[in-house]
Length: 446
Ligand code: NAD
Image 1: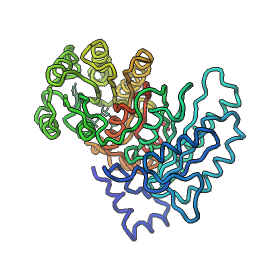
Image 2 (image 1 turned 90 degrees about the vertical axis):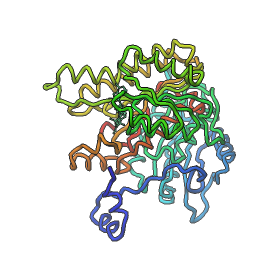
Image 3 (image 1 turned 180 degrees about the vertical axis):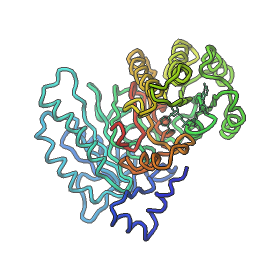
Image 4 (image 1 turned 135 degrees about the vertical axis):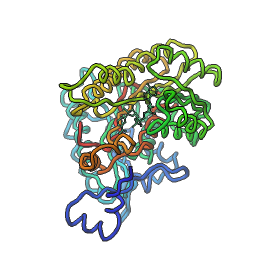
Protein backbone atom coordinates (compact mmCIF):
# COMPACT_ATOMS: atom_id res chain seq x y z
CA UNK A 1 0.00 0.00 0.00
CA UNK A 2 1.38 3.43 -0.98
CA UNK A 3 2.74 5.55 1.86
CA UNK A 4 0.69 8.71 1.24
CA UNK A 5 2.28 10.59 4.15
CA UNK A 6 5.77 10.09 2.66
CA UNK A 7 4.65 11.73 -0.61
CA UNK A 8 2.77 14.48 1.19
CA UNK A 9 5.61 15.43 3.54
CA UNK A 10 8.07 15.71 0.65
CA UNK A 11 6.04 18.34 -1.18
CA UNK A 12 6.19 22.05 -0.30
CA UNK A 13 4.73 23.69 1.72
CA UNK A 14 4.13 20.53 3.77
CA UNK A 15 7.85 19.86 4.26
CA UNK A 16 8.18 23.20 6.06
CA UNK A 17 5.03 22.60 8.11
CA UNK A 18 6.20 19.14 9.14
CA UNK A 19 9.62 20.53 10.12
CA UNK A 20 8.09 23.31 12.20
CA UNK A 21 5.69 20.90 13.90
CA UNK A 22 8.46 18.35 14.59
CA UNK A 23 6.62 15.66 12.61
CA UNK A 24 8.49 12.70 11.05
CA UNK A 25 10.02 13.59 7.70
CA UNK A 26 10.73 10.35 5.84
CA UNK A 27 12.37 10.76 2.43
CA UNK A 28 12.36 8.43 -0.59
CA UNK A 29 15.27 6.04 -0.02
CA UNK A 30 18.26 5.75 -2.33
CA UNK A 31 17.70 2.36 -3.97
CA UNK A 32 19.92 0.46 -6.40
CA UNK A 33 19.74 1.49 -10.06
CA UNK A 34 21.90 -0.37 -12.52
CA UNK A 35 24.64 1.86 -13.93
CA UNK A 36 24.51 4.41 -11.07
CA UNK A 37 27.59 4.89 -8.82
CA UNK A 38 27.69 2.77 -5.64
CA UNK A 39 27.55 5.91 -3.49
CA UNK A 40 26.24 9.41 -4.27
CA UNK A 41 29.54 11.24 -3.59
CA UNK A 42 33.13 10.96 -2.29
CA UNK A 43 33.98 8.27 0.27
CA UNK A 44 36.03 9.23 3.32
CA UNK A 45 38.05 6.46 4.94
CA UNK A 46 38.90 7.04 8.60
CA UNK A 47 41.18 4.89 10.69
CA UNK A 48 44.60 4.44 12.22
CA UNK A 49 45.23 0.76 11.51
CA UNK A 50 47.15 -0.68 8.56
CA UNK A 51 43.81 -1.93 7.24
CA UNK A 52 42.78 1.66 6.50
CA UNK A 53 45.07 1.88 3.48
CA UNK A 54 44.01 -1.57 2.28
CA UNK A 55 40.32 -0.60 2.37
CA UNK A 56 41.07 2.70 0.60
CA UNK A 57 42.79 0.73 -2.18
CA UNK A 58 39.78 -1.58 -2.53
CA UNK A 59 37.43 1.39 -2.82
CA UNK A 60 39.70 2.99 -5.43
CA UNK A 61 39.51 -0.19 -7.48
CA UNK A 62 35.74 0.33 -7.63
CA UNK A 63 36.35 3.73 -9.23
CA UNK A 64 35.07 5.60 -6.19
CA UNK A 65 36.27 9.06 -5.27
CA UNK A 66 38.20 8.15 -2.10
CA UNK A 67 39.58 10.54 0.56
CA UNK A 68 41.57 10.20 3.78
CA UNK A 69 40.77 13.87 4.60
CA UNK A 70 37.80 16.05 3.74
CA UNK A 71 38.20 18.98 1.41
CA UNK A 72 36.59 22.31 2.33
CA UNK A 73 32.90 22.67 1.49
CA UNK A 74 32.78 19.14 0.18
CA UNK A 75 29.73 16.90 0.52
CA UNK A 76 30.22 13.28 1.42
CA UNK A 77 28.66 10.13 -0.08
CA UNK A 78 29.92 7.80 2.65
CA UNK A 79 32.31 7.45 5.58
CA UNK A 80 34.03 4.09 6.16
CA UNK A 81 35.59 3.78 9.60
CA UNK A 82 38.26 1.12 10.11
CA UNK A 83 38.49 -0.04 13.72
CA UNK A 84 39.93 -3.54 13.39
CA UNK A 85 42.84 -2.97 15.79
CA UNK A 86 41.08 -1.59 18.90
CA UNK A 87 42.58 -2.51 22.24
CA UNK A 88 41.21 0.17 24.58
CA UNK A 89 38.15 2.49 24.75
CA UNK A 90 40.49 5.51 24.88
CA UNK A 91 41.21 4.95 21.18
CA UNK A 92 37.61 5.74 20.25
CA UNK A 93 37.27 9.39 21.15
CA UNK A 94 39.40 10.94 18.38
CA UNK A 95 38.00 8.93 15.55
CA UNK A 96 34.35 9.14 16.57
CA UNK A 97 34.57 12.89 17.18
CA UNK A 98 36.21 13.31 13.79
CA UNK A 99 33.36 11.32 12.27
CA UNK A 100 30.80 13.42 14.16
CA UNK A 101 32.31 16.61 12.80
CA UNK A 102 31.68 15.43 9.25
CA UNK A 103 28.13 14.16 9.51
CA UNK A 104 26.52 17.45 8.50
CA UNK A 105 28.21 17.01 5.11
CA UNK A 106 26.71 13.57 4.52
CA UNK A 107 24.55 13.59 1.40
CA UNK A 108 20.95 12.28 1.41
CA UNK A 109 21.11 8.51 1.11
CA UNK A 110 24.69 8.61 2.45
CA UNK A 111 26.31 5.77 4.33
CA UNK A 112 28.43 5.25 7.42
CA UNK A 113 30.05 1.80 7.63
CA UNK A 114 32.32 0.63 10.44
CA UNK A 115 34.67 -2.34 10.14
CA UNK A 116 35.65 -3.76 13.51
CA UNK A 117 35.99 -7.00 15.48
CA UNK A 118 33.57 -8.56 17.96
CA UNK A 119 35.06 -9.61 21.31
CA UNK A 120 36.35 -13.17 20.94
CA UNK A 121 36.69 -15.76 23.73
CA UNK A 122 39.54 -14.74 26.02
CA UNK A 123 39.71 -11.10 24.81
CA UNK A 124 41.08 -8.77 27.56
CA UNK A 125 38.28 -6.71 29.19
CA UNK A 126 39.54 -3.34 27.89
CA UNK A 127 39.73 -4.66 24.33
CA UNK A 128 36.27 -6.23 24.57
CA UNK A 129 34.94 -2.94 25.99
CA UNK A 130 36.30 -0.98 23.04
CA UNK A 131 34.98 -3.53 20.54
CA UNK A 132 31.46 -3.54 21.99
CA UNK A 133 31.51 0.26 22.28
CA UNK A 134 31.60 0.41 18.47
CA UNK A 135 28.26 -1.41 18.35
CA UNK A 136 26.61 0.98 20.79
CA UNK A 137 27.96 4.03 18.94
CA UNK A 138 26.84 2.78 15.55
CA UNK A 139 23.33 1.75 16.59
CA UNK A 140 22.81 5.18 18.16
CA UNK A 141 24.29 7.01 15.19
CA UNK A 142 21.86 5.16 12.88
CA UNK A 143 19.04 6.69 14.94
CA UNK A 144 20.51 10.18 14.55
CA UNK A 145 21.04 10.19 10.78
CA UNK A 146 18.35 11.70 8.55
CA UNK A 147 17.72 12.07 4.83
CA UNK A 148 17.62 8.31 4.21
CA UNK A 149 21.26 7.92 5.31
CA UNK A 150 22.13 4.70 7.16
CA UNK A 151 24.84 3.39 9.49
CA UNK A 152 25.82 -0.28 9.53
CA UNK A 153 28.85 -2.29 10.56
CA UNK A 154 30.94 -5.25 9.47
CA UNK A 155 32.36 -7.49 12.19
CA UNK A 156 35.47 -9.53 11.40
CA UNK A 157 35.76 -12.85 13.19
CA UNK A 158 39.21 -14.02 14.32
CA UNK A 159 41.52 -14.62 11.36
CA UNK A 160 39.49 -12.48 8.94
CA UNK A 161 41.34 -9.55 7.43
CA UNK A 162 39.79 -6.24 6.30
CA UNK A 163 40.66 -7.26 2.74
CA UNK A 164 38.77 -10.58 2.97
CA UNK A 165 36.58 -11.30 -0.04
CA UNK A 166 33.31 -11.33 1.86
CA UNK A 167 34.36 -8.19 3.77
CA UNK A 168 34.64 -6.35 0.45
CA UNK A 169 31.34 -7.84 -0.75
CA UNK A 170 29.59 -6.78 2.47
CA UNK A 171 31.14 -3.30 2.23
CA UNK A 172 29.95 -2.85 -1.33
CA UNK A 173 26.47 -4.05 -0.37
CA UNK A 174 26.23 -1.71 2.63
CA UNK A 175 27.47 1.30 0.64
CA UNK A 176 25.08 0.65 -2.24
CA UNK A 177 21.39 1.34 -2.67
CA UNK A 178 20.77 -2.40 -2.28
CA UNK A 179 20.96 -1.98 1.50
CA UNK A 180 18.49 0.95 1.54
CA UNK A 181 16.32 -0.47 4.36
CA UNK A 182 19.14 -2.12 6.38
CA UNK A 183 20.00 0.25 9.21
CA UNK A 184 21.79 -0.05 12.55
CA UNK A 185 22.85 -3.64 11.75
CA UNK A 186 26.07 -5.64 11.77
CA UNK A 187 27.14 -8.31 9.29
CA UNK A 188 29.66 -10.79 10.68
CA UNK A 189 32.20 -12.23 8.28
CA UNK A 190 33.34 -15.63 9.54
CA UNK A 191 36.05 -16.50 7.04
CA UNK A 192 37.91 -15.02 4.12
CA UNK A 193 37.03 -17.54 1.45
CA UNK A 194 34.81 -16.94 -1.54
CA UNK A 195 35.07 -14.23 -4.14
CA UNK A 196 34.90 -10.50 -3.68
CA UNK A 197 32.40 -8.25 -5.39
CA UNK A 198 32.63 -8.66 -9.13
CA UNK A 199 32.08 -6.00 -11.75
CA UNK A 200 29.39 -8.26 -13.09
CA UNK A 201 25.86 -6.91 -12.99
CA UNK A 202 24.78 -10.56 -12.80
CA UNK A 203 26.66 -12.15 -9.88
CA UNK A 204 24.23 -15.09 -9.82
CA UNK A 205 24.61 -16.08 -13.44
CA UNK A 206 24.96 -19.83 -13.86
CA UNK A 207 23.09 -20.44 -10.57
CA UNK A 208 19.67 -22.04 -10.20
CA UNK A 209 17.42 -20.77 -7.41
CA UNK A 210 14.21 -22.04 -5.83
CA UNK A 211 11.96 -19.45 -4.18
CA UNK A 212 9.02 -20.76 -2.14
CA UNK A 213 5.88 -18.67 -1.62
CA UNK A 214 6.76 -17.01 -4.92
CA UNK A 215 3.26 -16.26 -6.21
CA UNK A 216 3.01 -12.83 -4.58
CA UNK A 217 4.44 -10.30 -2.11
CA UNK A 218 8.05 -10.60 -1.02
CA UNK A 219 8.50 -13.96 -2.79
CA UNK A 220 7.48 -12.54 -6.18
CA UNK A 221 9.98 -9.70 -5.71
CA UNK A 222 12.77 -12.11 -4.71
CA UNK A 223 12.12 -13.92 -8.00
CA UNK A 224 12.56 -10.66 -9.93
CA UNK A 225 15.78 -9.65 -8.17
CA UNK A 226 17.43 -13.08 -8.33
CA UNK A 227 16.64 -13.15 -12.06
CA UNK A 228 17.96 -9.58 -12.51
CA UNK A 229 21.15 -10.80 -10.82
CA UNK A 230 21.44 -13.69 -13.28
CA UNK A 231 19.88 -16.76 -11.63
CA UNK A 232 17.55 -19.27 -13.30
CA UNK A 233 14.33 -19.40 -11.31
CA UNK A 234 12.10 -22.18 -10.04
CA UNK A 235 9.08 -20.51 -8.45
CA UNK A 236 7.21 -22.62 -5.87
CA UNK A 237 3.79 -22.05 -4.31
CA UNK A 238 0.63 -23.94 -3.36
CA UNK A 239 -1.65 -25.18 -6.16
CA UNK A 240 -4.33 -22.64 -5.11
CA UNK A 241 -1.93 -19.84 -6.12
CA UNK A 242 -1.15 -21.57 -9.43
CA UNK A 243 -2.33 -18.80 -11.75
CA UNK A 244 -0.29 -16.07 -10.05
CA UNK A 245 2.65 -18.42 -9.75
CA UNK A 246 2.66 -19.14 -13.49
CA UNK A 247 2.61 -15.40 -14.23
CA UNK A 248 5.55 -14.71 -11.86
CA UNK A 249 7.59 -17.58 -13.33
CA UNK A 250 6.79 -16.68 -16.96
CA UNK A 251 7.76 -13.10 -16.35
CA UNK A 252 11.38 -14.16 -15.68
CA UNK A 253 11.55 -17.11 -18.07
CA UNK A 254 11.58 -19.50 -15.12
CA UNK A 255 9.48 -22.53 -14.24
CA UNK A 256 6.53 -22.77 -11.86
CA UNK A 257 6.30 -25.73 -9.51
CA UNK A 258 3.08 -26.24 -7.56
CA UNK A 259 4.22 -27.70 -4.27
CA UNK A 260 2.90 -27.29 -0.74
CA UNK A 261 6.11 -26.94 1.30
CA UNK A 262 4.55 -28.90 4.17
CA UNK A 263 4.11 -32.00 1.99
CA UNK A 264 6.45 -34.85 3.03
CA UNK A 265 7.73 -35.16 -0.56
CA UNK A 266 8.25 -31.38 -1.09
CA UNK A 267 12.07 -31.56 -1.05
CA UNK A 268 12.11 -34.61 -3.30
CA UNK A 269 9.91 -32.87 -5.90
CA UNK A 270 11.92 -29.64 -5.77
CA UNK A 271 15.25 -31.46 -6.14
CA UNK A 272 13.94 -33.69 -8.92
CA UNK A 273 12.64 -30.65 -10.84
CA UNK A 274 15.92 -28.75 -10.38
CA UNK A 275 18.05 -31.74 -11.38
CA UNK A 276 16.05 -32.66 -14.48
CA UNK A 277 15.46 -29.11 -15.77
CA UNK A 278 18.62 -27.31 -14.68
CA UNK A 279 21.13 -29.99 -13.72
CA UNK A 280 20.93 -29.19 -9.98
CA UNK A 281 20.18 -26.52 -7.40
CA UNK A 282 22.44 -23.76 -6.02
CA UNK A 283 20.18 -21.42 -4.04
CA UNK A 284 17.22 -22.27 -1.82
CA UNK A 285 15.07 -19.38 -0.56
CA UNK A 286 12.58 -20.43 2.11
CA UNK A 287 10.13 -17.56 1.82
CA UNK A 288 6.69 -19.23 2.17
CA UNK A 289 5.10 -18.12 5.42
CA UNK A 290 1.72 -17.60 7.04
CA UNK A 291 0.27 -15.79 10.05
CA UNK A 292 -2.66 -17.05 12.18
CA UNK A 293 -2.70 -14.42 14.92
CA UNK A 294 -4.43 -14.93 18.31
CA UNK A 295 -3.47 -14.11 21.88
CA UNK A 296 -2.02 -17.26 23.44
CA UNK A 297 -5.02 -17.42 25.80
CA UNK A 298 -7.24 -17.85 22.72
CA UNK A 299 -4.86 -19.96 20.64
CA UNK A 300 -6.12 -23.23 19.17
CA UNK A 301 -4.10 -26.19 17.92
CA UNK A 302 -4.94 -25.54 14.25
CA UNK A 303 -3.51 -22.02 14.36
CA UNK A 304 -0.41 -23.02 16.28
CA UNK A 305 0.33 -26.13 14.26
CA UNK A 306 -0.26 -24.66 10.79
CA UNK A 307 2.09 -21.73 11.44
CA UNK A 308 4.81 -23.99 12.80
CA UNK A 309 4.34 -26.44 9.92
CA UNK A 310 4.66 -23.85 7.12
CA UNK A 311 7.13 -21.40 8.66
CA UNK A 312 9.53 -23.73 10.44
CA UNK A 313 9.02 -27.49 10.12
CA UNK A 314 8.94 -27.38 6.31
CA UNK A 315 12.28 -25.55 6.27
CA UNK A 316 13.82 -28.06 8.69
CA UNK A 317 12.62 -31.03 6.66
CA UNK A 318 13.60 -29.61 3.27
CA UNK A 319 17.05 -28.57 4.50
CA UNK A 320 17.87 -32.06 5.78
CA UNK A 321 17.11 -33.54 2.36
CA UNK A 322 18.78 -30.72 0.45
CA UNK A 323 22.02 -30.94 2.41
CA UNK A 324 22.11 -34.70 1.98
CA UNK A 325 21.58 -34.50 -1.78
CA UNK A 326 24.26 -34.46 -4.48
CA UNK A 327 21.86 -32.29 -6.53
CA UNK A 328 22.41 -29.37 -4.11
CA UNK A 329 25.73 -27.67 -5.01
CA UNK A 330 28.83 -28.03 -2.89
CA UNK A 331 28.82 -24.20 -2.66
CA UNK A 332 25.04 -23.86 -2.37
CA UNK A 333 23.38 -21.22 -0.21
CA UNK A 334 20.17 -21.32 1.77
CA UNK A 335 18.35 -18.13 2.76
CA UNK A 336 15.45 -18.37 5.22
CA UNK A 337 12.82 -15.71 5.86
CA UNK A 338 12.54 -14.98 9.58
CA UNK A 339 10.95 -11.82 11.04
CA UNK A 340 11.70 -9.15 13.61
CA UNK A 341 8.72 -10.68 15.48
CA UNK A 342 10.98 -13.68 16.03
CA UNK A 343 13.59 -11.42 17.64
CA UNK A 344 11.48 -9.01 19.67
CA UNK A 345 8.14 -10.82 20.02
CA UNK A 346 4.82 -9.35 19.00
CA UNK A 347 1.47 -9.30 20.81
CA UNK A 348 -0.93 -11.79 19.25
CA UNK A 349 1.87 -13.63 17.45
CA UNK A 350 3.20 -16.23 19.89
CA UNK A 351 2.91 -18.92 17.22
CA UNK A 352 4.41 -16.79 14.43
CA UNK A 353 7.23 -15.43 16.64
CA UNK A 354 8.01 -18.96 17.88
CA UNK A 355 8.27 -20.17 14.28
CA UNK A 356 10.48 -17.26 13.18
CA UNK A 357 12.72 -17.44 16.27
CA UNK A 358 12.93 -21.17 15.50
CA UNK A 359 14.17 -20.31 12.01
CA UNK A 360 16.98 -18.22 13.50
CA UNK A 361 17.92 -21.08 15.84
CA UNK A 362 17.88 -23.55 12.95
CA UNK A 363 20.06 -21.25 10.84
CA UNK A 364 22.71 -20.84 13.55
CA UNK A 365 22.89 -24.56 14.28
CA UNK A 366 22.95 -25.54 10.61
CA UNK A 367 25.67 -22.98 9.89
CA UNK A 368 27.84 -24.55 12.60
CA UNK A 369 27.34 -27.95 11.01
CA UNK A 370 28.16 -26.53 7.56
CA UNK A 371 31.30 -24.66 8.67
CA UNK A 372 34.15 -25.27 6.24
CA UNK A 373 31.89 -27.10 3.76
CA UNK A 374 31.53 -24.27 1.23
CA UNK A 375 27.79 -24.10 1.81
CA UNK A 376 26.13 -21.23 3.69
CA UNK A 377 22.81 -20.64 5.44
CA UNK A 378 21.49 -17.28 6.64
CA UNK A 379 18.23 -15.72 7.81
CA UNK A 380 16.69 -12.44 6.75
CA UNK A 381 14.41 -10.80 9.31
CA UNK A 382 12.11 -8.19 7.75
CA UNK A 383 10.36 -5.60 9.87
CA UNK A 384 7.40 -3.62 8.51
CA UNK A 385 7.26 -4.26 4.76
CA UNK A 386 4.60 -2.75 2.47
CA UNK A 387 2.71 -5.88 1.35
CA UNK A 388 -0.89 -7.16 1.24
CA UNK A 389 -0.30 -8.44 4.77
CA UNK A 390 0.56 -5.03 6.24
CA UNK A 391 -2.08 -3.23 4.09
CA UNK A 392 -4.70 -5.11 6.15
CA UNK A 393 -3.50 -3.57 9.43
CA UNK A 394 -5.74 -0.95 11.07
CA UNK A 395 -4.76 2.58 9.90
CA UNK A 396 -3.37 3.84 13.22
CA UNK A 397 -1.35 0.69 13.91
CA UNK A 398 0.08 0.79 10.39
CA UNK A 399 1.08 4.45 10.69
CA UNK A 400 2.81 3.88 14.04
CA UNK A 401 4.63 0.80 12.69
CA UNK A 402 5.85 2.79 9.69
CA UNK A 403 7.10 5.85 11.55
CA UNK A 404 8.70 4.09 14.53
CA UNK A 405 11.86 3.30 12.64
CA UNK A 406 15.02 5.30 12.05
CA UNK A 407 14.04 5.67 8.37
CA UNK A 408 10.48 6.66 9.42
CA UNK A 409 8.82 4.48 6.75
CA UNK A 410 8.03 0.90 5.87
CA UNK A 411 10.32 -1.10 3.61
CA UNK A 412 9.45 -2.45 0.17
CA UNK A 413 9.52 -6.13 -0.85
CA UNK A 414 12.44 -5.06 -3.07
CA UNK A 415 14.49 -4.16 0.03
CA UNK A 416 14.09 -7.69 1.39
CA UNK A 417 14.81 -9.22 -2.02
CA UNK A 418 18.10 -7.28 -2.32
CA UNK A 419 19.31 -8.71 1.00
CA UNK A 420 18.31 -12.24 -0.04
CA UNK A 421 20.19 -11.89 -3.31
CA UNK A 422 23.30 -10.55 -1.56
CA UNK A 423 23.34 -13.46 0.93
CA UNK A 424 22.91 -15.92 -1.96
CA UNK A 425 25.76 -14.40 -3.95
CA UNK A 426 29.29 -15.85 -4.23
CA UNK A 427 30.59 -12.70 -2.50
CA UNK A 428 28.78 -13.73 0.69
CA UNK A 429 30.57 -17.10 0.88
CA UNK A 430 32.22 -16.05 4.16
CA UNK A 431 28.91 -15.07 5.78
CA UNK A 432 26.88 -17.83 7.42
CA UNK A 433 24.62 -18.31 10.43
CA UNK A 434 23.49 -14.67 10.45
CA UNK A 435 20.04 -13.20 11.02
CA UNK A 436 20.16 -9.91 9.13
CA UNK A 437 17.34 -7.49 9.91
CA UNK A 438 15.77 -5.49 7.09
CA UNK A 439 13.70 -3.19 9.21
CA UNK A 440 14.93 0.41 8.85
CA UNK A 441 16.05 0.00 12.50
CA UNK A 442 12.49 -0.31 13.69
CA UNK A 443 12.21 0.61 17.35
CA UNK A 444 10.19 -2.55 17.92
CA UNK A 445 12.73 -5.11 19.00
CA UNK A 446 15.67 -2.79 18.63
P1 NAD B 1 2.31 -13.26 1.56
O1 NAD B 1 1.23 -13.82 2.41
O2 NAD B 1 2.02 -12.09 0.70
O3 NAD B 1 2.90 -14.43 0.61
C1 NAD B 1 3.23 -15.69 1.13
C2 NAD B 1 3.22 -16.70 -0.01
O4 NAD B 1 3.52 -17.98 0.57
C3 NAD B 1 1.85 -16.82 -0.70
O5 NAD B 1 1.98 -16.78 -2.09
C4 NAD B 1 1.35 -18.15 -0.21
O6 NAD B 1 0.48 -18.83 -1.15
C5 NAD B 1 2.66 -18.92 -0.02
N1 NAD B 1 2.48 -20.08 0.87
C6 NAD B 1 1.80 -20.13 2.04
N2 NAD B 1 1.79 -21.38 2.51
C7 NAD B 1 2.49 -22.14 1.63
C8 NAD B 1 2.82 -23.51 1.57
N3 NAD B 1 2.40 -24.38 2.52
N4 NAD B 1 3.55 -23.97 0.53
C9 NAD B 1 3.97 -23.11 -0.46
N5 NAD B 1 3.66 -21.80 -0.46
C10 NAD B 1 2.93 -21.32 0.58
O7 NAD B 1 3.54 -12.99 2.57
P2 NAD B 1 4.72 -11.89 2.45
O8 NAD B 1 4.28 -10.69 3.20
O9 NAD B 1 5.18 -11.77 1.08
O10 NAD B 1 5.83 -12.62 3.34
C11 NAD B 1 6.84 -13.47 2.79
C12 NAD B 1 7.71 -13.98 3.93
O11 NAD B 1 8.27 -12.87 4.63
C13 NAD B 1 6.97 -14.82 4.96
O12 NAD B 1 7.80 -15.85 5.43
C14 NAD B 1 6.70 -13.81 6.07
O13 NAD B 1 6.53 -14.43 7.32
C15 NAD B 1 7.96 -12.96 6.02
N6 NAD B 1 7.79 -11.62 6.59
C16 NAD B 1 6.96 -10.69 6.03
C17 NAD B 1 6.84 -9.42 6.60
C18 NAD B 1 5.95 -8.33 6.01
O14 NAD B 1 5.94 -7.22 6.56
N7 NAD B 1 5.22 -8.58 4.96
C19 NAD B 1 7.56 -9.11 7.75
C20 NAD B 1 8.38 -10.09 8.31
C21 NAD B 1 8.51 -11.33 7.72
